[in-house]
Length: 160
Ligand code: UDP
Ligand code: MG
Image (cartoon, rainbow, N blue to C red; front, side, top):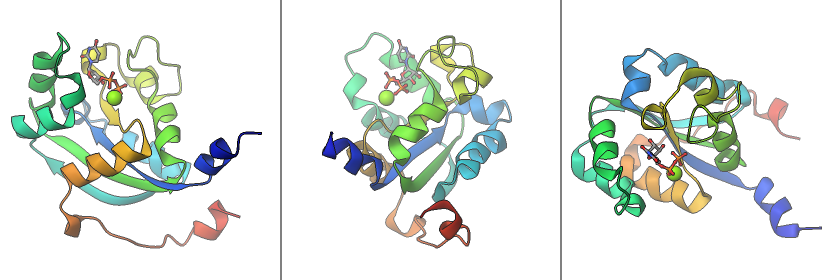
């Protein structure tokens, strides 16, 4: 019995999900949004945005020392991205599963990367890796007034 795991599964969390420039250019925005929407998560922030270099560097600051960092920053700033904040029970881990492995060739079919991408450097979508980073990244990419609290009519049909 692992009480902390049970607790984390039942926690309402927020995840920062971003469709990267290749996903936007390839016309995958609707498909990707639809997967999170159909799963039952709640969209509380959404915008198309041309990311400045400084913001990309701050978002990926933990990867600063990696050899691929300069190309990653170039990729993320190469065209508009779609920024999203999604809320729900266990949304952080669940979104990571829906997104699939970092290397799309290793991502399972049925996942976004498994279905829609082939290369790590063009893997179409970002998802926060912890609830703490979810909060950090949403605060980084959105102004406070851009986040909208609301109650979907389907809520009683999603949660006991
Ligand atoms: N990335 C890359 N080459 C690598 C590893 C990562 O270009 O060898 C890029 C890729 O776009 C990835 C992002 O850097 O999505 C962030 O890496 P991370 O390990 O955090 O993967 P993620 O959390 O996105 O699955
Ligand atoms: Mg990551």
